[in-house]
Image (cartoon, rainbow, N blue to C red; front, side, top):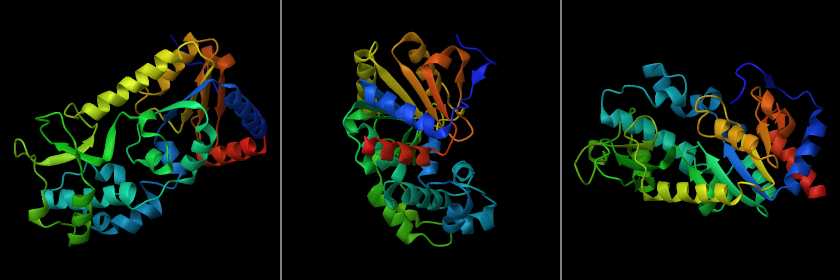
Length: 295
């Protein structure tokens, strides 16, 4: 359907791009936001560098782990070590963090629009910023949820209380054995509700959110709609990027906007329906919010 080689990167002046996106946003009947890791990175939730060193220097020294992403896949020798790592990662990315400025600016832009959010992020930033929970679809899971490691039943569990206790009680990169979480149904260890393999649990809440998203798409299939892609890379293009391209191509009234630092592009087939802004997502949303405030 799309060219594999020919893509378009915008060469338009940055300020002119902001103004054009402002106009598109103002004129749109609906907005679908597709958010990837780049949006949270622009909000300061980096998984590497000084933030990683501050919170995980001990794991780095002992295991050679260099960032939070790779640390999540490290083969720890015990569950006590595994949950010392994960409780810390959950805490700093989900519970002991406030809403990032890019998310707050984004809400200012769409709060009076008919909008929906599709995201692969698992850090809860949209809800922290005040987005309507009924307009969110977290496809890849949530740091705040656990599931059975064997996926023996279709249910997830809130973990805040247990995680905070693990963080308070861990010593030498281990939690006390009595804090280890086990499935209440089969007795297997619990694990994160993150889509890393075929055992990812899609519970009732997940399917309800999927249904609301599909209903929104159906409602606006032929609308003057803006597909606003923020910080989405190429790790999982089949979730946001490719569907956004396809739906834009099928609707001549649709506009596809790609905001991403170093990865703002679109297929040649969408050149007349696209706006690609190659810049920091957070700074772009800040400029856009200021532009909308002046109008």
